[in-house]
Every structure is written in C-alpha cells, then in structure tokens.
Amino acid sequence: MIRVAICQFGEETNCFVKGRAALRDLCPPTGRWCLSTEVEEVHRGTQTYIGGALDAVRDLDCKAVPLDFPKMNGANFLAGPIMTKECVIEAVGRICDELRRRRGEYDCLFLSMHGAAVSDLTEDVESYTLSEVRKAVGDLKIMSSLDNHGNLTEEMVRLSDGYIGTKAVPHTDIYEAGYRAAAMLIRTVRGEIEPKMALRKLPLLSFWPAGTTLDGTPKEIREYLADYVQRHGLLDATFFQGFSSADCACTGASVLEVADGYVPEKEAEELAFYVWDRREGYRAESCTAAEAINKALTMVKDRFVVLFEGSDNPGSGCPGDGTHLLRELIGRNLPRTVMGPIYHPQAAAICHTHKVGDRFPLKVGGDTQPEIFGAPLDEDVVYDGHWPK
Ligand SMILES: [Zn+2]
Image (cartoon, rainbow, N blue to C red; front, side, top):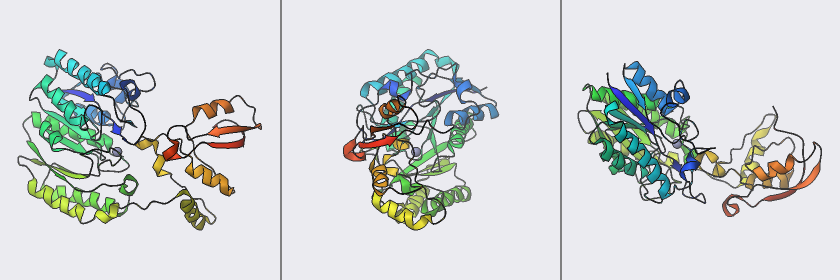
C-alpha cells in the first residue's frame, strides 16, 4: 500500500500591504500549528486542498501520512504581507525535520502550496520550500496543488514532479485540485503514468477583479483549456492568472501543461498564444468611489445594487479598513444604503461601551494605510445595536 505524506505551506503575498507576516500570523488566532494527529479531523470532508488529497488517498486504497503544518485559517491559504525570513526558515525547517524523522513512514509527498508566496528570504518561496524538502526526501515523488493566482517559475517546475492548479476564479475547485494532484502522485508512484510539465510565462499582469471565470474571456479560456486537455489526451492544463499584488520578478500569468510521458512544449506554446490573443479580456475597468456610485444610481431603479470595493479586499491581503467608499456615501447621504463591515476593533470596542440609541463622535477605519485606503472618518454616529442575528 502506497503511503502518502500530506503537508501544506504558503501564503498569497500582497507586497503592497504594510508590515511583515511572522509565522504566528499564518496560524491565527493562537499561532498554533495543525498537528499531524489533527489533520484528518480538521480537513476530512472539507472543500479544501487537503480535504481533496485525503479523499484521493482513500479512494485509491492508499494510506495518508499527515505531517504537522502551519494552520493557515484552518483550511486554506491566507493572504497577507511579505513573510519574514525567519517565518519561512522556521516553517520549512520544521516540515523538513519531520520529513527526516519519519522518513520510513511514507513513499511520496503531497505538498499543497499557493504559488505566490513572497518573503524577505526569497521572492520564490515555493522553490525554496521544494529545494529544502528535496534535501530531506531526495528524489522521492513530490506533487502539489496550486492556486490559480500562482506566479510560476521554471525553478518551481524543475523541482517538482507535477502540479495541478485551480481553474476557477473564485476558487470553487480547490478540493478538486487537491484530489487530482494527490491522485496523479499515486498513479505516478504506481508506474501507471509518467507526468512531465511545460511552462510558458506570458508578459501579462492580470488585475484580479477582471479574472473571474464566471463569464467573459476568463470563462471562455477556462472552457477551451478543459476541452483542449480532452482532445489532446493531456493530464492537465492550467492558465495561471498570476497575482499582480505579489510585486516581484516572477510575477505574471503563465500556462502550465502536464502530459503523460513527454514534455508538452508544443501544446504549451499553442495555449499560451491562445490566451495572449485574448489578453484584452483581462483589462480591468477601474473607477473612483464617486463614479461607482453614479453608475450604481443609474442601475438601482426598484431593486438594489451591490458595490464591491475591490481595492481593499482582505481576500487578497488588504486590511479591510478602507474608507473611500463610505466617505463618499456619507457625503451624499443616500437613502436606503448599507455599508458592509469595516475592520476596526477599536471603534467596535467604543460602540460596545454605549447604549442603543446613544449619539457620540467616533473615528472609523483608515487605521492601517490611510495614504492608500483612505483617512479615518470622524463622524457623529448613532449606535443602533449589535450585528444583526
Ligand atoms: Zn487565488
């Protein structure tokens, strides 16, 4: 029975966010890791990379050998600022120590990574991780799932035996990516397939709000690639949109293809040109808060409009305390308007010292990077109670 070591490390790094992520920041709120003995309980049955990998191992009659790994948000990758040098050295060091200590207990390694992790140590955290892991496990087969926003490098491809990337943005297919990467790993160890990869980097920075695969060009490309894989009998093909907020030399979109028994250079070239010809579909239209509200007012009629303030998206590592949109909404005093949450614990704590109906001055938002996300609002507020149940 093949024994598959299972582990995870990474971050979606937003280099424009102030500060640095230490190791404990990757494991909120306590800094504690997910221990090998807890991995099954935490991840089994979840729509996560590790959840997918565990199911593949079970379905293919193999044995999962979970390792300790940083907890992230319990399941998937956090987005945040550049990781400190110590964070990466300590995390990867601990993973490698366990791989060495338990060397006789596993036959291959499933290592869930993001693809856009940046640290003060290196701009290519995935290659560093793999090169350290290689020192611990030698030429044992290692395969990974990757986030569609990964900024892939040739070094990452050289150090790995195979990747499966998520195809959907938003990533509704992370379970599937984890499952397929683990299944590909097991089939390779069994000698059923011999995956080989070809990478093509595109001189393209995709602005993530334009990249949703629910419609438009990104949807068309996703469907074309899925069909292409079938027609050419490939193991996989992913168009990685890359993560433009990870501001480094390897940032950018790429096409990665995986074939059985040969390096699919020709196919990767073909798909890279296919995407390149459609690059205008990734051009984002941005506007000011005032322009967005003007547009919303022309659309609202008797329904409602949701304005998603994408420049301050905690999902891509931003602080979530931006005030540009709220300032504009208050300035216009529009009826029937609701603003979603702003992350500001100090303001919330002040509210909790008041009674419902109290009026008092309050500073809200703009705490982290007012020069980018907007200055704090200083307004008289009426406290109308707790978060609705
Ligand atoms: Zn992503």
